[in-house]
Amino acid sequence: MDQYTLNLLIVGATFALYIGIAIWARAGSTAEFYAANRGVHPVTNGMATAADWMSAASFISMAGLIAVLGYNGSSYLMGWTGGYVLLALLLAPYLRKFGKFTVPEFIGDRFYSPTARLVAVICLIVASVTYVIGQMTGVGVAFSRFLEVEVSTGLFIGAAVVFMYAVLGGMKGITYTQVAQYVVLITAYTIPAIFISLQLTGNPVPGLGLFSDYTPTGEPLLARLNEVVTDLGFQQYTNQDPSPGSVINMTLFTLSLMIGTAGLPHVIIRFFTVPRVADARWSAGWALVFIALLYLTAPAVGAMARLNLLDTIYPQGTNEEPIAYENRPDWIRNWEVTGLIQYEDLNEDGLIQYYSDGAAIAEERGWQGNELTVNNDILVLANPEIANLPGWVIALVAAGGLAAALSTAAGLLLAISGAVSHDLIKGRFNPNISEKGELLAARIAMAVSIAVATWLGLNPPGFAAQTVALAFGIAAATIFPALMMGIFMKRINNKGAVWGMVTGLIFTVVYIFLHKGWFFVPGTNQFEDTIAGSLFGIQSTAIGAVGALLNFVVAYFVAKSTEETPEHIKALVESVRVPRGAGVATAGH
Image (cartoon, rainbow, N blue to C red):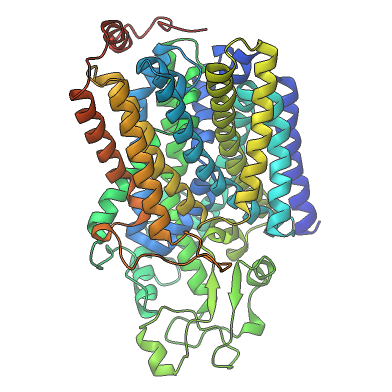
């Protein structure tokens, strides 16, 4: 059986499974659509949360960034994992005890303000739409290679599948679909990692293989990788970036990912689906276990992918000439079709010169510049092909990448549709809407969200993980501070919360647009970088931590200079914080 047919069969089988689950678990009420009727078992919810959490950025792009960035890519691991711990300890149990359906509903009730709820809706939509762009980017990358279609066609196929199971099943359908998607994605991630670790080091555990000896030379794998990348002019893999501002950017970026994680609405709403507050805590613990299975493997996958890639181009070592373009391996030929690998023969010698500017060997050999461009997002997906693994493993990785992207996309779209239908339509414009009408509005909102996300995914602002990092920055600067102050600071009133969120949102979004150069230049059809530098050298992906600080400061001083929080709200906050955690929620529908 050829690879294309195998890909179709395995990917098609997983899609049929997801849609079948959605039909079985079709939501018939708003309680089922928004919160799966609060009847999900903690282990099941933990697995679904892990799938919701481990997006295309985790599965496809994170290891690719680690492969390229080395030590500096560890920010993604530390930020995302640490942030989940913050969410599990500081937010999830308290929000579940409050007993509402959505994050904006909590903010609106806690800060006794329809305006606060509206601002929270806007912040949620901006962060979630930015995040879902990264998922659709991952869907397009996976489809374009494994089903041999254009990236845009892959996006449309992915959107259609999400539409089928998310619009039909709501949270109930998404929960059980995500359980299946977790099984698919973790299997698809670990099996090739085990094969490749065995090939390169003889150790079947990828995390241990990373610190084992590289079989062909007998030297430690990381030492071998450092030697190869430095020969080619790249930064040493295990060293920190020596450029000015790298330390502050790495620190702020890690912090931004951590608090952005704790403020992501699509993860928070997963804890609204369990019966009791104690179950929310257990769900968080189980989710961390399931997440760790992938995150402990990712550094090894990234390092081994980088080494395999370089050994493909320089099979005799960097002291010898690279391979000729006409002799390039099949995996390069396959990925060239997608446009995600590009070759330009600058010195017309027919060889593939792949290196970084400044490499000593380039001047010695008279090379005219790097000739191979490799998109970071393909490394995990291409890894089994680079390592010449069996065809079924390649197809399984395709299914895993799609499962990761689609599971998170569904969770994000549910958060968006809930904010629109429950918080905007019912909460602000039509409080008397019937349950049937609200359910219809939620499904229409999700359908529109899918269309918008697909359109935006056609022109993403960066690699999947980079796009997702921007979403984390927005969530860090807006939602996380409001939730933390809402739970732990009774003095913060409605005016403080509103002005804090508005400040964090405007500052962060404007900074990202300025730093990225996305402001449209009148009279042209292109975007232009409008600033020469940045605030203290802080990158756009790291600015969320600064936005969060501004949110806290503005909220505090506005609250201090205005009226006290009403006593009944203080009592509400106290009731949420009292650790009567094993019982039912204090409020609900």
